[in-house]
Image (cartoon, rainbow, N blue to C red; front, side, top):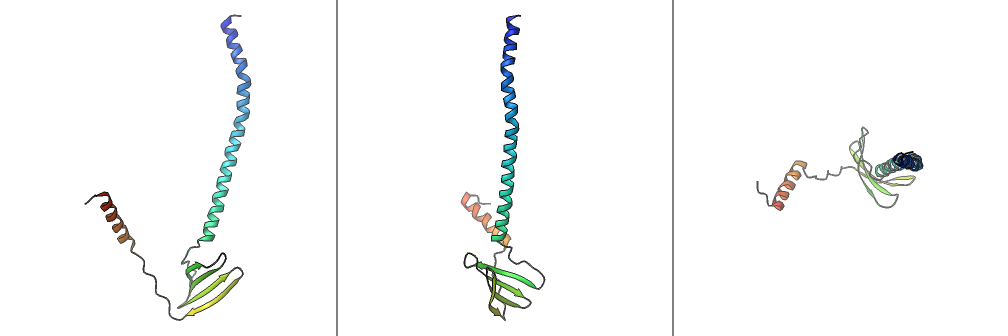
Length: 135
């Protein structure tokens, strides 16, 4: 046998166990990626549930009953302002207990909120002033 062919066969024989080991490791690496992705998805689902529980959407409308505002006063205690028809009711909510704190005959005035376009315009002018851009 020629020395070049013998060297090629020797290199081929030496490379076989390495390629066999790499093919065995590849499915394990793929399985690791799948498990890691699954853990990330489960963590995102749990985080979304926690956020929705922690920050409920204020002003949900179910017809004649609306939750106007809510404030946490403890770990499991909240004070909630609810609109029922023309009246507003202040409720104390704790785990397993809801108490009426006060019934308001006159509704509280709506808090003034900045107008979004005016706020965006003022922010843009502020940004231009910081950058030194005078348009």
